[in-house]
Length: 323
Image (cartoon, rainbow, N blue to C red; front, side, top):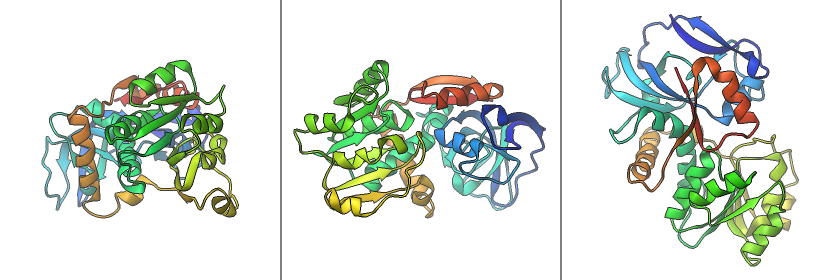
């Protein structure tokens, strides 16, 4: 028996229950992991609330790091005792779980369990956003909404290292300091400032090459007004609610803009892509170009408090659960 957080009916933070569950021996192609740290991500609240439906009952969490304690038939490339991490299929909010081996990456010695749990989903998201969806280069001006959030802090650091001028929106003065410390050249307090007007001022009317928007409803369609002609709007999350259906003609009216709604799981679907993306992420973290501090730790049984903190936007950077 092991402990796991399960959802029997979607709802608020109180919908999460700490259950005793049986974990069978790993099946063919699977390994069994004992978690040392578990990632907390805003997407977890979408599954908990029912915004993203899932078969009931289910265990939340897409991100974790730990040690392999058993191998299923046919697993190659891994052994018992290996330090591994993943950002993949739900089931992370647990002490022990089975997971398919092709969803795992080995952790280099330079990356701790806590770092890995804090950065796999957020860091791999930053990797595809900056290096694949829109390839950020020296000279680009980019806007990152929620610049003091988990993805935002990693993306600000990484984009600065790539030579971009980073503009970040944040919700408080403390978050503004954090974003600036982590690579944002300009910070906009979106609650008290009109971010569209501030972007126009900062860029002297030239606007941005790309906008990365994990906020959603409250920043749309303003984000489109921050883009120069042929710029790209990248919507990768909806912390304030989903972007409603809109008239595609807006894109032509505002400068033949591009708009996309990518997901990490599409980028990692092809064999070999996950390992390649993880190597890129581990390289920038191991070299110190990107730092991934853990700003909050919650015991597994206090997961409701963790979700309340996430949804109140009281968190900055990365938070983790400790089983």
